[in-house]
Image (cartoon, rainbow, N blue to C red; front, side):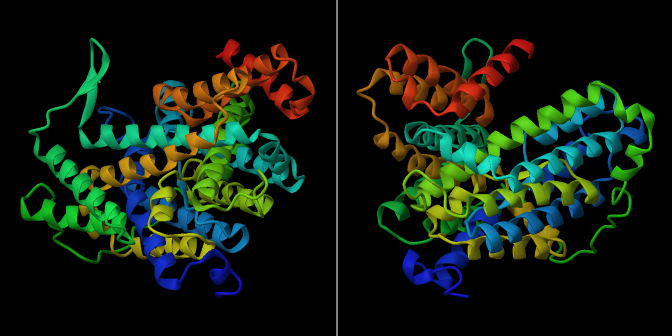
Length: 441
């Protein structure tokens, strides 16, 4: 096992990988609670049951799809990158497709499955790997830094430190609020341990924060440790019923499939590049085993659609595990193991609330933004697309949108500067694609 994952070469150990994998799981465990609530449209009252997905079934589908994706990533890609149904994509699935367009959730799962098949075929042809390797090194660093800013913003938002403000869009929250104080405590504790160079500081910070939260009654103490695994029958295989319905093959479904395809492609590519950069796994601006790594999200997406969940993709919270020492795919296997265990220990997950995960996201953002130093800021033609890539991610609340804006400006500045031949043909192709995407949006 050590030889397969090259522990000695990468300077890691079983303990380090286990801590990293566990930290990643804890940082993204919220998806096991949030995804079922989102896909079942639990916040919407007076909704016909036919439009709601079964929460228990979606919970099982979420855990199993996450485990499958993380296992494939670990064994084939060998990256410390975990997968789960993506936030944003699940909201698009539930609120735009099902609730807004009144499309049955079975049809929405069909669109997810088809997008997964397209992903799989694109990966087998090697096109996805070529696209990622064609991205200029400066933009890759910008993507990593942008994701750092984005997840820091997520952490600040989840903690209540930054809140919505009608006058200025965002503003400082109520710092005397209990959960917000708990998050600030967790942030201070984690910063102290990180500054002292304690390995696994992010993980320990989350555990200490959860314990303190329970002591001060800010987090409910679980009444159960183990519970019965819900049935997956209500959603398992339901996707196939949509293909026999003539209404599924309407022109409107094309746009839905393309949206799932577009967002997942660039979210996954951006996250993979960012995690590889942070873990020091990039070699000559290329990702080793990129093709195999990219297979994982397409396989997980197809499996998730059959089980009954929205698009499964790489999670930026994996960077929390990297910050705790994860360097190989073994950490992803550990994360997958915890997703399987979560099927039986769901009550314990109730302590992993936003105030617990928020400090980890903020700290990881600090670590990821360090890649800014690798960007050639002295060259304006590089600085503009790099900066716009970074700033657009948190402001648009989308990794894919940030990448799209950067891809549009990069060819423009390079052409004006007279560096046309240095731009890869694939970048010109995406310049056109992204322009069309924004025009037709």
